[in-house]
Image 1 (cartoon, rainbow, N blue to C red):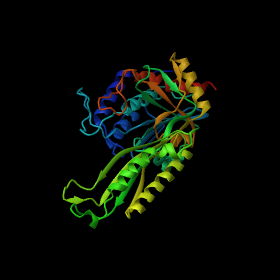
Image 2 (image 1 turned 90 degrees about the vertical axis):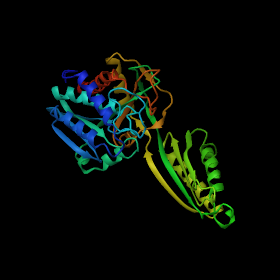
Image 3 (image 1 turned 180 degrees about the vertical axis):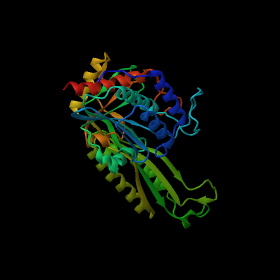
Image 4 (image 1 turned 135 degrees about the vertical axis):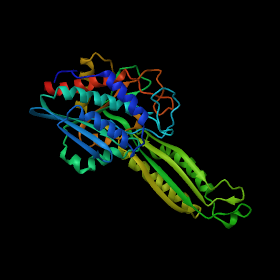
Length: 384
């Protein structure tokens, strides 16, 4: 394929701004998916799938000869974080913002669609996946389970994520574990309310809740081997109601468990449940537990990482090989657990606002760099 014929950067910047203003949370990306579908149709893909795993969209561009099938994935969803920026394209949804840069990732993959629309790969095919519900860890798995996706069999999968705190346009790579596995745990403790003057007549979960917060926070220290990394972060807790005449009968504790491999996470989950059962029994409380927002470890294939590094070198971009995995999670791991592939980082600037910060905004000048990286990755396979 010719490298960058058809690429219209200003159109992509305008699209990114429009997507930013449309910001929709996980599972509700209907308008965003509609805008993406409209854009992709203008590039005349050979096949267009919609409604994948929810609101997911996939465009397929086929070559004349048999060859590798490459899937490039980006994300549709925004975060339930209000935006404090005051530019013209700020989010129209007051409690929602593109604070992870998924609007920029979509613009990059739409740029790749522009290139593929003008120049199909000579061999094989390229599939562009706009995936729903990444932020909740549900989207990738739902796409994999979708009947439509059963007709799609990629040989390789690739994705990028912009990374504030790194030199702008730098490519960050790592073989094996790139990003952590994580899962959210909700623990519900049910006792019996009573008058605050007579707490002995009820069953307050206050002590059980306080012990749980301490013990969950200390869980990695006492339950995970020294050669394994893990974190347990209590992210929310509530007890009873704001009524000074009432002794509480209900408590809730929420925590995020995080590890660098799936096996360690399974063990950590078991220990967390043991803690919850122990404290609920000690204080004669009913117990309910619920697992939410499950992310697998994102594991990069060595061959795929090598292709990313060669592509960056071909484009004259600096490459940083990260020594330790990222501690955040990405549900691209569900795809790399099934297909060979890699996620790589794209530096967004040393002084760029952090991901998930209310003043974060994706840098528009990264769009062309991202398109050129994915185009070069495709070219690498064409040369094989």
